[in-house]
Image 1: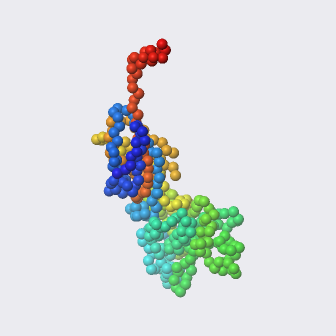
Image 2: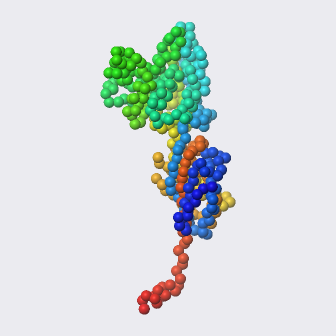
Length: 306
Length: 64
């Protein structure tokens, strides 16, 4: 049931609200039964016009996108001569308990998977998080580095940074025979007065709050993600390959999962990512489908501009 | 931008409307979306053919 208002004898306005749909069997394509059937006069040109459209787009981190069958986030390891050794799944699997013994005498080798959490799990925790808040974005990126134990992220520079790259990265930090590691950042950019971490009257170490303070100075965040050098220990090298619908989160074309694009999506050769400020699906087109007669329908599709 | 889909048809009877959305890569958005839209249906009857005697009657009335 929807409201229809006849503003004059030749115009009918119809207000459609998703919460008042008549049939939501297909949740993403609701149907509306008109309370009053619209009969147009015989044999003339009529027009249907999309007057206005207000949308609350869904989060990028919903089950639909994160669990798409085509998603992958792989690490491939190579010997020094370039021979491929193994492919590790970082999207749905982890390096398990062995991962935090890498870098410890007698511990797991760096050729094993390093991540403590699967990346799909990290992403799905964000579905109901307000990602317009830069504190939350900073916390996520910090946690991403800490849990994957494999990446560095380089953000754009700000005036006054000089030649110091704005790069935060995972760093080995063995404590009591465990190497959970830590997120490290250039003290010149993040610490009080540009002094070393732990100097008198400064911060002891890098924190998500310090990252958030800096991100809040930017109205658009671009960053480059790379693998850290510790993965290349033991004479081998590593590269990461990303693909699938989930790449929309970073405003990357999901068609890049095609094999010919794999090299371009390799993190080890630098992946530039534009971070959507809202982390919500950008809905660009609306389709209005109106059956009128047997085998006849009106299809109105309209580009939306946010 | 807010333009219209303009279609011609013969005596349509519209009882149901279905809505869906796509993203910038052309994929149908399969997550549920909160939205409110307004559609306007416009139709105007064709101008009637002028009566043959209209002009004569007008002249008779005003131009005597």
